[in-house]
Amino acid sequence: MELHRLVQLTTGIALLTCVLAVAGTQAYASGRAQRAALLDRLAHGGQPLPPGRRRRFRTLDRRLRRTALGRRLELRLAATGLDVTPGEFFAGMLAAVAALWLIGQAALAPFFGPLAGLLGIGAAVQFLNWQRQKRIERFIGQLPELARILANATQAGLALRTAIGMAAEELEAPAGEELAKVADQLSIGQSMDQALGELSERLPSRELVVLVTTLVLSNRAGGQVVSALRNLTDTLEERKETRREIRTQLSQVTMTSYAVPVLGVGALFLMNGVKDGALERMTASHLGQACVIIAFAMYAVGFLLIRRLSRIDV
Picture 1 (cartoon, helix red, strand yellow):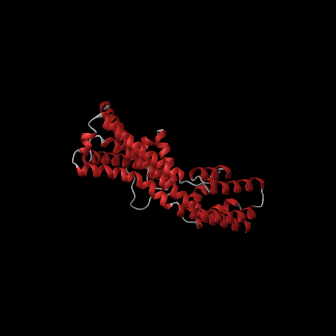
Picture 2 (cartoon, rainbow, N blue to C red):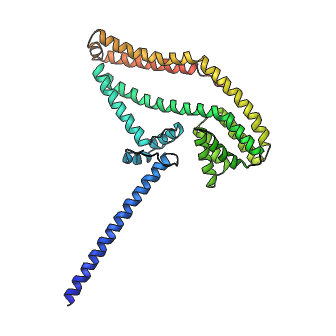
Picture 3 (cartoon, rainbow, N blue to C red):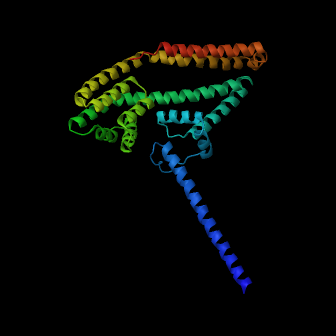
């Protein structure tokens, strides 16, 4: 009888252990799924993913976010407004570097493989800078309308926090998205100075700094927000037209800065096409490799100098 009871007790404990193990496994899987969904929403600006959109390279993305490089890349991607996680961008950059490495090695010479890979990294960084600058330019173009909406809302008696939320609903991206982030930060208790300061850090520009300074000072001192915003709207409209004229005048110089390195790379393909294997023989010696590196460095310096001389801050 005692042996029978012992068997029943052991069987019951075993069944209870199995039930707890199944429940624990389900809870662990549910927690991982919720954590992954939360990371996806954070990477997507706090919004749910579009239908059919799935994140890839989650493990790489999770490990990359723990590093300083991953955190900087995450901030840079947030400033561009791209729907890409740091892991996805890093994996795509590695694939592009590998492809350019193989193409440069096969089409020109083995020595040009690493140089083409470095070119891929530079192109990825330049792409992020271009996307970020384009988003900043679009945001600057919406600043007069933003100042006008805030002035009308405050003149109607609405608080500045409410006016920012209203502007976030009426304006299109990127101003609507950025102001929605500011409104969310204000709703969870963050101060106006901190929320607007983070906005100016994400999209740095002189026009936005002026607008943020006006709003912050008016919010602190309780000054005439409406009259300040009215005057700022006219100023932003004038600066918008001035920037457009300058961009039109410098369009030829901008195209020249990109044409210079393209001509250099095209000359390599032309040289190798005229006489097959010429680049491989040239880069077989250390002197030839040094000449190629110096030539690439001079093209890069020329590109940077043309871009720097054509930059006019308004």
